Length: 469
Image (cartoon, rainbow, N blue to C red):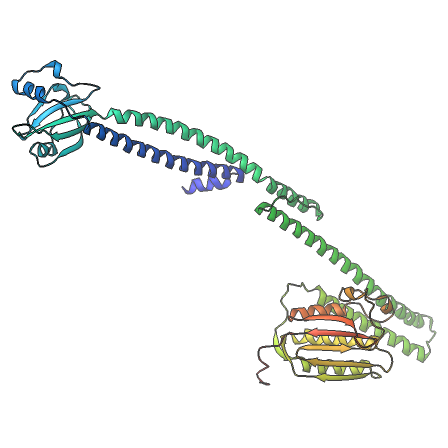
C-alpha cells in the first residue's frame, strides 16, 4: 500500500486527478450496480413467491387417487414450465408424479401437513440437482387428512435474469469508468491550464527577473484567486525593487553633497600644508567648522538610512509603558538648544503610551527640528499634549497643498527647503515610528494663520509605569 502511495505521488498532478475521478466514479458505479442487483434479486424472489402462492391445484383429487392407487397417470402430470408437484403426509411420505424431480421433505413441510403451520416457503435441491423454490400448503379434504401439497419452481427463473443483469451492469460500469477516466483527464487538463501558465510565469521570473509578467485572470474560482495573488506579489516585488533602486539613487545623491563639500575642505587644508601657505586663522576656523558640520550631517544621514533600511515587518525594540509628556519635555530641551532665539511654549498633560522610547523620542525630535528649521527669526512654536494628541505648530511659511501628500516620502523635500540642511528622511522616520506604536501622524496648514501644524495621535497604555502608578 505504501509503495502504491509513493508511486502515485510520482505521477503528474493531472494524472492523479484523472485517477481519482475514475476511482470515485468506479466506486459510485459499483455501489449503484450492487444496489440495483440486490433490489432486482429481491423483486424477482418476491414475484416467484407470489407466483407459487397462486399456483394451488384447482383439483387435487386425481393426484390423490393416483398416489393412493400406486399408478402414474401421465394425463395428471402438471409439469408446465418445469414446475413440480408432490403430495406429502405427516409421516414424510412423498407421492410425486416425476420421481426425478422429487423434492426433499423438511420439518417445515411436515408441520404444514400436520396443520401446525399454514404454509412453508424455502429453497431446496431436487433429486435431479435443480435448485427449487418450494411452497407447501395444507390440503383441506373431506374427511380431513394430514396431507400437504408441495409446489416447486426452478431457481433458474431468478438466477438467469440476475446473471444477465450482472454482466450488463459490469459492462456498463466498465464503460462508465473508462469514460470517467477520459473525462477526468480532460477536466484536469482544462482546470490545470492556469496552473501551467502560472508555472511558466514563475519560471520566467526566476530566469529573467522580469517582474512585469502578469497572468490573465478569468472567473472567481480558486485558480483565479491564485492568479490574482501572483499578480499582486509580482507587483509588490516590482514596487519594492523600484523603491530600493530609488532609495539607493536618492541616498547616493544625498551623500554626494556632504562628501563633495568635505572633500573640498580637506583638499584646501592639504594644499595649504603642501605649499606652505598658511590659511588665515579666521578662515581656517571656518573651514574646520564646515568640516565638522559636514561630518555631523553625514553621520546623521547614515543613521537615518540605517533606520529606514530596517524592514517594515521587523520587530521593533522592546516596548515599554512610557510617559509621552516626559519624552516630549526631553525633546523640547534639545529643540531650545537648536533654536535659542525662538520662543517655544508647551502645555503637556500626562499621557502614557506603550512603545519604543528611543524611537518615539527620535520622532518627536524630528518634528520639533522641522518646526525650528522653518520658523522665522524670533518666531514662536506652540506645543500641546492633551489626551494622546500631540500638536506642534510653527509660524513659518507653511506647506503648499500640493506638497502635503508627499511630506512623509523618503528623501522628498519641498522646493522651498532645498537650500536648507537636511536629508528629507526625518518625517519618514516620524511616520514609521508612530505607526509602529499604533498611532498616526499628519501635517496640515494652521487653522488660524500662517504656519504648519503637526499632529501625532497615540493610543493610551492600559496602566502607567509601576513606579508612577
